[in-house]
Length: 140
Image (cartoon, rainbow, N blue to C red; front, side):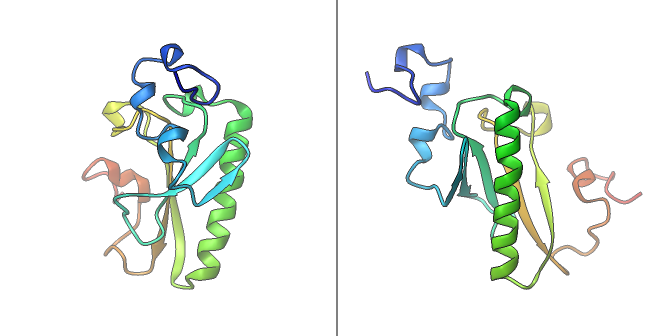
């Protein structure tokens, strides 16, 4: 059996061997790496430059991440934000989000953070930002 991040396939958590975001399944898509985390382009971007930051270690969600993984995620988010801002002067803001659990919209159960560049006029009224995950709660 081929090891996956130091584990044999027989030792993987249920679903981990077929996880879309496990390192072995995304290593050819990595655009940036920082210690324990990697970044790939979102396959269904909300806006141009939409990136996903993913721990190399399989963990289901934000609350299973280690302190080091969280610090590395913040560092990689900052690096990517700076690179995107330098390349695209139309970017005037960002949304950073993570879904935890199916009821919150998580569809891939390997933790991942979204970095979504925003531009003036990309939505008629951005007030409320992430509050828009529940229709009717964005504008208050």
